[in-house]
Image 1 (cartoon, rainbow, N blue to C red):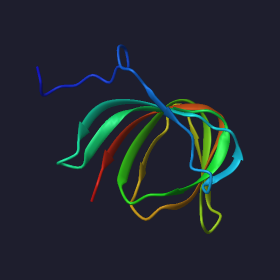
Image 2 (cartoon, rainbow, N blue to C red; image 1 turned 90 degrees about the vertical axis):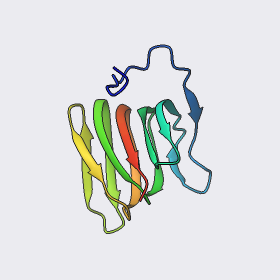
Image 3 (cartoon, helix red, strand yellow; image 1 turned 60 degrees about the vertical axis):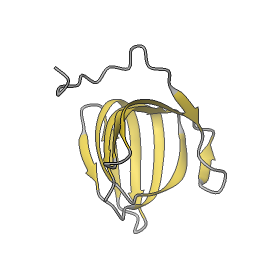
Amino acid sequence: MNHLFKFDRTGITPETESPEADRLLAGDPVHTTWSMEEREEEGIYSGMWQTTPGKWKVSYVEWEYVYIHEGVSILTDTEGKAITLRAGDRWLIRPGFEGTWECVETTLKDYVIVMP
């Protein structure tokens, strides 16, 4: 069954990082990523991502589908329009979105990224 893939971070060694200093706006967030699928030649990436509280600038050049498992985060665009992401939410972030990501409560999400 190599055409089906279950999202499961068991046995995957996660990578951790923090936002670049010039993007960080508040707190000391730590991002943890469990990469599950990386098809660089096709521009497709998927996995699970978790962040601890903080706020940083974001700029999307890719399409990203997200499913929020737990936590609360707020995405705010450059015009000030804010969307709160909560457990159970599903969102598609389109290329060109710019603004901030603020993690209010440690947030865990599934992600599927497609590069244009």
